[in-house]
Length: 468
Ligand SMILES: Nc1ncnc2c1ncn2[C@@H]1O[C@H](COP(=O)(O)OP(=O)(O)O)[C@@H](O)[C@H]1O
Ligand SMILES: [Mg+2]
Image 1 (tube, rainbow, N blue to C red):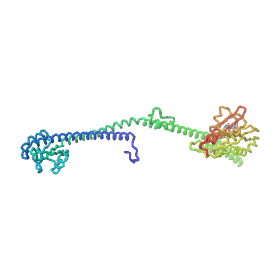
Image 2 (cartoon, rainbow, N blue to C red):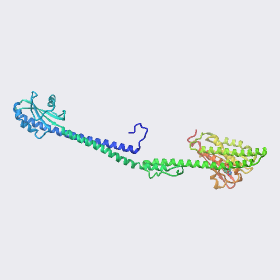
Image 3 (cartoon, rainbow, N blue to C red):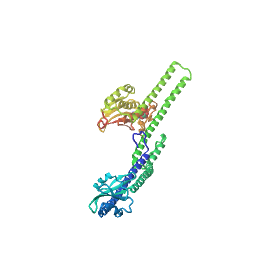
Image 4 (tube, helix red, strand yellow):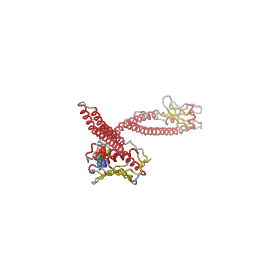
């Protein structure tokens, strides 16, 4: 029924057909058994009758004196089968002559010897019907041997069996048909929960991702499917929300610089200016373009880092070396703002070296920007279970507690000072994405005295299952 067909049949149809087939096979078996039992029973009765009659006939023959008498004493012999139209009795002499017969013998003369030898009923097919025959040796009173045969016409029995067979076949067909109907109904009602699930699924579109299948209401077999489906919806909804947020954030944040560029350019174009003015205008535009380019680059980085498929290429990273690199890199700015950068401790983590550097660099650049002039920035590394940490601290304006958690989201600004125009607000979001990729975390604490400390915590390499 299913075969190698690429087309898949409906479960309802399949169940109904299988059920009907099973029912047909069962009723066929039952019918076959009944038919067989009936055949055996009828045959046995027939054979019993033949045995009984032949015993009577042998008895009657024994009372006949001679071959010549056989035809005279026929009434006694005929009496044996009187009232039984089906039965034919005949007596054969040793010269194969028919001495007596109540009808026309059907069994071929050649088969008589075997019948006599076996003393068992045998069935013979004739042109019109079949007969069952039994033969027995007998002796006349004179001692002369004869063969006594009795045949029964099985026409009636055969007709009876044939009509039973027809009825059985009819019953099988009917029960298969009824079974098909019943099974179709049962399968349909049994599969209703599945259709309901499909209906719910059909209703769900991009703006209705909040809809869920009811797991409790689902039958046990479908509960797992419903739960998996719901989990998929949940993931879809989350990705969709992330995507939405991402594009609206990006559009929102790009609008201001682009509007600035347009406004600025319009002003410059409003009248003719000197070459120096144009140069100054282009330079200012260039700054804005660079900012935009950085923003797009940062957003792409976050999008890639937050994608569930992203994996980190882990290699040992020496945090002390990273800190030294920062010291070198920020040297000019530090000097300009009369800041000092101290490094303490050492530690190794498993991670992507470039990403780790980028996270630390973002923190240091924030610290440099927000540190009070002449103060000291410190990088402190602590190695050891449960986590290896790197903390960047600086003195400056404290971060209000209510905005602390918000700082790590995209385009966040603490609004603690007037310098917010400078940053894009993606630095800490990038730090957080990087730390999540490394199964770590970034936290901040800032006390009222103005000491602000950002801490990167990496899980210890030994407990990291994917450590290279
Ligand atoms: N060391 C710090 N001291 C005070 N405020 C900070 C410090 N680091 C970050 N912030 C606040 O967090 C905000 C977000 O930082 P960040 O994501 O790096 O964006 P950006 O540096 O582009 O402004 C900053 O605008 C600032 O208000
Ligand atoms: Mg920053």
